[in-house]
Image (cartoon, rainbow over all chains, first blue to last red; front, side, top):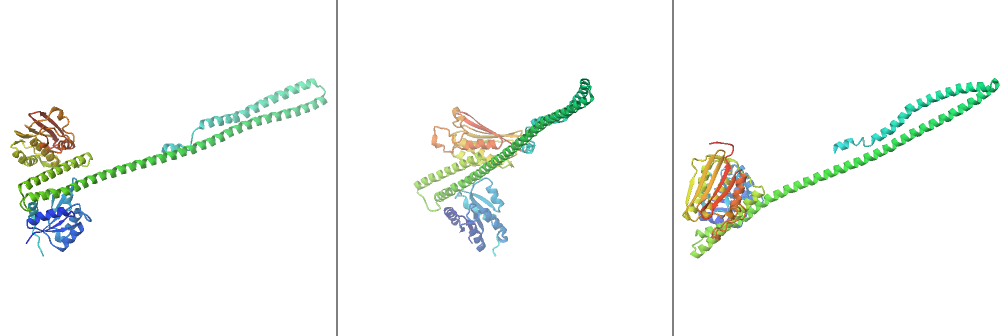
Length: 129
Length: 375
């Protein structure tokens, strides 16, 4: 079965880029355009990994990560913050909010898929009901 | 201010009032006694003298009685006149004194009113100034927040499109979207390089702005410096290899752990090392690190073309780029060394450069080891 990734990102091109790279590596990538839509998507479907932009409309990435960590069944899903490094302390803030990892934009297409695979593999097995 | 307000009940000019009332007082106390005394004395002299004289002048008792009666009338009249004069004068003096006191009381009240007004004005002025200062402070605080927000936004907004440019050109160059002919590959390589250069510029400009705006928060953590050195060397090794340069390192004995900002220390080192590689065409780039007391000394030395003496002074200024003669071959932001100097300063150390034109350069800096930990 294809690993399923939810990418919460408001920028069209950035989503397309990640979608393209990960699809080529056999991922199934679903998109949410803002934080609220992202939370809705996690309630509707199950995912192996959540990629999270931080500067999001409606609900920012930190809030999304915190909300996800509060849900019993979602606590073990790896969440990777994917954002343009803005200010010092952003990485710490992302990790404190509950993110598993932190990747900076711009991404390197040569190594991106690999590091995402690493996060999926490292995650404890998610039991799909 | 409060002291003045408290003193306003007393007011100025009491000395004069006291002088006037004292004068009246003195007159009231001594005047009557003196007058009464003088009066008794004069009366006694007059009565005794006139009786004696009249007894001699008028031997006839009937005449003497009548004359004595007239004398008595005259004496009473004279006494009444004298009493009148004394009382008139005394009243005038008392009146005058009271009028003066009254006048001065009015002046005192006026002065108090003026003083109170002045105090109120002063309080209003101070309150106004305080308000102005608070406003200015609030404004400065807001400007500072705006500056932070601006930097964060710029960083985000500039990198987001670059993510697309670098990402898609990377995908295309990897042939993920189909094969490319050599010319397409070459041109895409240029797109990619330019984008990467732009990214460096943005990162450097933002770093510098953050430093200048005082927005750069430095970490203070204990970390293994040896690991940092090895990591940084591995990052520049491919560049050195590509130019066939020897990349040497000497940090024995191992410098151990220091307390500083690991990411920034590595940033400084990476900057100096990649600069050295960039400006060296053949020979060696060498990193030497020594721990001496509570300082760690770093030296990055190369056998490159060196820096002209007149350029050495400008080396750490923003946007200064050495005219290498090879020129645009060395693409940089011109901000690297300027950031290095500021970072070294923020971390509590010093940096300096030394060079002989044509023979190479050496960049030396030291950093405190932090919390006095000796190895």
